[in-house]
Amino acid sequence: MHPEDEKEFEAKILADETVLLVDGPRWKTEFPEGVRTLSKITGTYCIVWSTSDIDQLKARYIEQCDDWYCESEHATIQFLRSELGDSVITEGRIAISTVYDHSDFSEPQAKQVDARFKMLRRYIKKEYCNSIVQWCNPTLPIAPASLKRSANPSKPDPQIWVGPYALEWMRKNDCRRIKQHKSAVVEGALTNAC
Image (tube, rainbow, N blue to C red; front, side, top):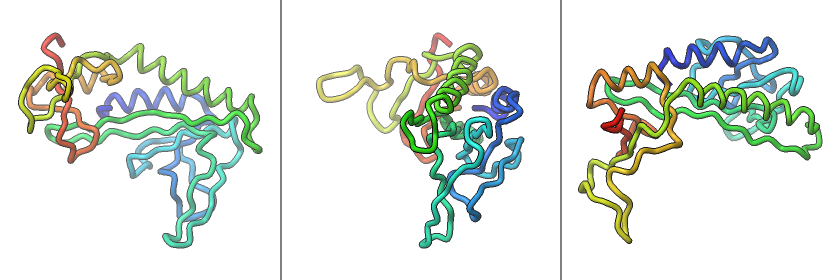
């Protein structure tokens, strides 16, 4: 997500007053600090947690690194934030790993997490565009798919959803790309039809 897309997404997430954001799955204390603004999340891994789903996140201590690691990810939404550079924006994503038979997490609680995730997914599908990015490995020749290789570039990817500000940013310069991470070789470019 472009930072401007992220601001709108943040507003959607925080429309629910019970939702808190947590900076990553590792903390220096047993209980994480929950905040109500992405500006206080320093990393790219953000946990979306509602106190109406689970009162407190549980963590286990890891002595080797002197950190606490989240043990309640089944009760949260994972939000991996994009990073924006001069010519590259990295993929972000949202994900869940809801567990319906967890000992301290009831089925109604799990359904609440699922519903929150589905609401965010619907928002993305309504406001963002997909099938407008195709992947290319610039170190390989441009060629159609064959028995031993995929097409380079690929067909437009229906799994990549591009926000309106990210789309505008990419359209302003043909050299701008999407990558899974900053150092990736394979890159996504807008299709000619976009």
